[in-house]
Image (cartoon, rainbow, N blue to C red; front, side, top):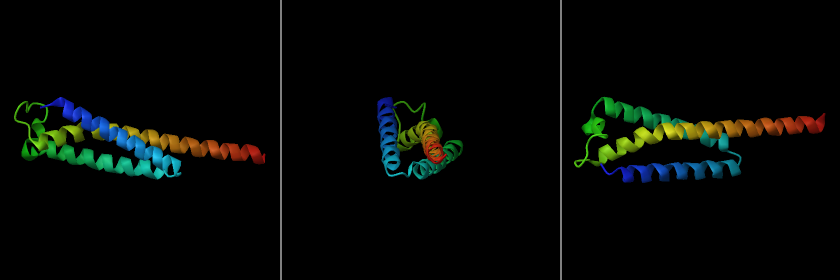
Length: 113
């Protein structure tokens, strides 16, 4: 398996999702986007876990396929590694969204009090 392909895809996917969350934050929709990313990443992680445990087209051999890797191996490797990373990224987005709303409420309360 050519690990650089998996690494490049994971970095590109992470950068793309960071950009999507940044764009959502600018539009005031960070919380919704973070929850949507969480749902998609969790669904992806469940799907790849099922594929690995059921040995779907050899998906369970993505770490040991060496020279005879198929696209299933690459997809399962990316999904297995990227899903928890994207779940963590969505959690950070949810925390930032919640923190900014808390800060706005606090500032509004201080201005009225």
